[in-house]
Image 1: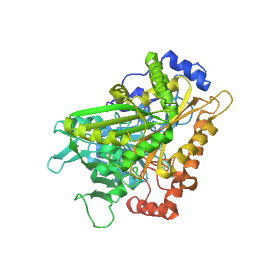
Image 2: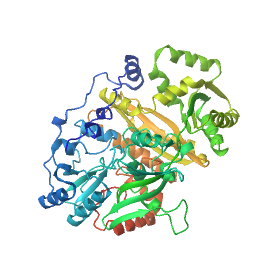
Image 3: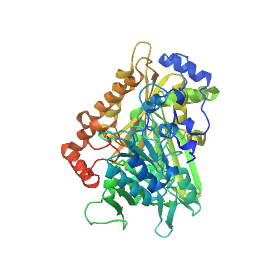
Image 4: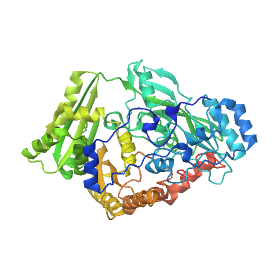
Length: 546
């Protein structure tokens, strides 16, 4: 099989194709002054320097898989296996850069359709071989790590060939996608019908429809379009016990909604092969604006008022003072000084950037919704930066992963984590997680930046998304972040301050903390579902279920 190199996960997001991000000199100087960053570059190691063991896949299993998908679609070459070794977390990228051992699968199987997926699942179940579903490979919590568990070998099931829009029902506004369709292609296919899904997370360029469902994804415009589980109307799932189809009506009282057992199951209960989603009319007008609020508490209160008045913009994103500082400083140039002077003249001492974006099918509808939002927003003190600030954010909305690549090349430990809680606990949660991260990452000569923003808001609460930037500990680069992440997770879980994950899922990283959120009984329920659907435990070993 000839591989699409854009699909393979390597040492960074940029390696998948697209335009590199180059840090300007002023940004490097600022980071050095602010964090103690040494200017010495630390480029990625070549793939040839990485250790990859020989495949341990038994020949009888190899033969059985070839019989299902064909010889060209069972890949055991070094580069093919290395390309599906893990996701895109900071630790994944470190390991691909030679800083630690990689969990490399014994083979990659690339089925053509849901029927072949079902057969591959059955082959692996029969022979006791671990099977890891792989879509866009964008997990940042170890969700696609090729862990063997107690199995003799592990296979990655690459869904890249499940790339079709199966059907569109324009009357009901439903679309059926195969699980491997990447988000930009899904939008292109829907646009032909005048429709959109409207699900735009930062992983949009690479993530897949199946991955969105498997992880309960949330997009940047979730305030307008909803979270991905709100969009799912049906699923088709391959399990060791047979194929499972769910979803026959928009609502049902026929027992618990079993679709939600599959959505968020991270490939541990079955492999999602098709997803039926709710779609909407394609917007024809958009308006994105920037505003500044003075201080975190005032900004969070403003977003809460918008949510509880039900007038949130489709995109509603509030940066705290630290994230606002990073954004203003790294953008550089004379405009940064002008903006700061403009804000000081208006009494803004602790700027927090608020991005609001509306999308609509008519200028009248957009204007009506915008007026309703601004009417509530202006109940507090706010300074408008207009559409230039909003459009700057919109055009750079997917730049974060590429910026991370550039920072890693400079020797920076840069990673994110997220959580959510109720409004009454939001600021306490932010304070505790920030303190945990700063405490764990501070060291002589290293001063961390810990920035935060509200990425998704609800009537009852909001999510918090943290970004850390600190010089890498070259002596123990993995341990540096592992200790910080553990400290943050403890802060989140202690006293049930918030959820261990709002939209990144559980994977490997969050599994130790899941019991504190759902209880021991909840873990037993999940384990019971696992035993029923995957009695031999071959599906995505080591994820979600103990």
